[in-house]
Image (cartoon, rainbow, N blue to C red; front, side):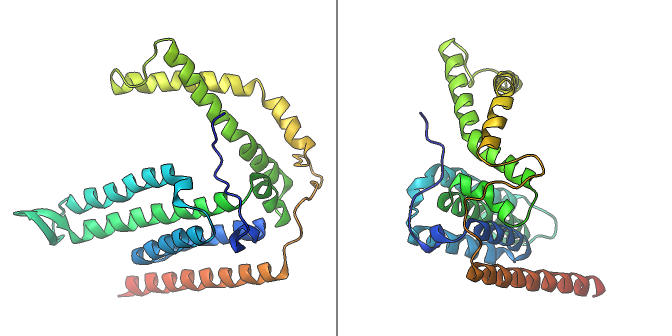
Length: 264
């Protein structure tokens, strides 16, 4: 059985933090990555990376995600920096007038910093919180039960669907199908046919899986779910309030700067 879970067991402060608190902090940090200047995005990503390591989540546990993120992190600044735009000064010449331009490089670093920060924040949430806790966390925050049901269904069965996709691809390969040959549109059409077969397989089991999730307490109807998580501690509530105030201050600062620049 292929393992597709990000969760890493541990007893660190991040592991012990209430799942609802982590969900709120993740949402606020997600907004902050959009509001902060690009150098601070990289600082946030680095602090999260170090914090995960301190909490016992080694980079080896999510090395595949790091590799994929690293490719985008390096490619985007390079492509943007090398793209010559009129009026954009050359800051790192490589060959004559060819090299890295300031505005393009900063745009690329801003986007890749956003991508990297969101990626490492998502890993921090998934690696330190069990899936059933994430499913119940929104309900503990007063959100409608249907949200918890949908999350419970997704968290429980998306890894299984991914395994089915990989198994189907392996079966097709044993029958002589190659996913790496042919024109790009031929490979795309082949992937579409594979996904169609996967959808037919999953739709045939939706009712059974839906009943299984609802039997475990995650209701799609207007009734309370069976709470397994403890109530949110007061200290966590205070932490959420402080994080919310910080995000509000940064948002207000961005709004003021926006209107100041428009007025100038």
